[in-house]
Length: 132
Image (cartoon, rainbow, N blue to C red; front, side, top):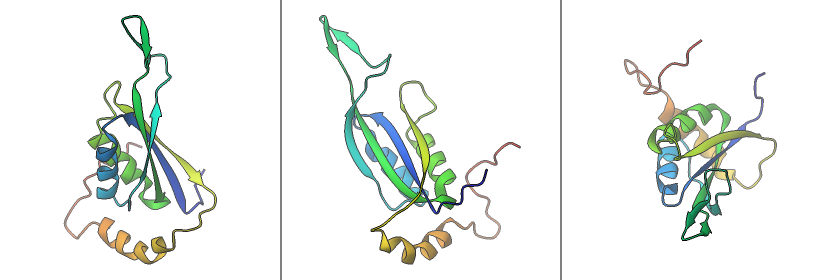
């Protein structure tokens, strides 16, 4: 089923201190920024014991609103730069966004983003082709 929404929200959860890597990777792939929230992990592997006291590691959640056509590039860049393919490094996922207000700069910057992401003649995209 094809997504007919103009925007997607990429949500990335990483250990404290790694949010800057996520934001930098997203920007390199076409995002204009992100919002970083502080959080704590409560998963089965998150709680550690230290002298019998439960310690829950601090997390950072990065919210990145991105135009739908750039979603795959941004997700790939985040996974690669933040090392999300390694156990315990975090996770990233996207959700379609129904309505957006307050980002008037996005419309005027869209042409710049498209020009930045369009491969130049003779140059291949850095992202590997998806298997069929």
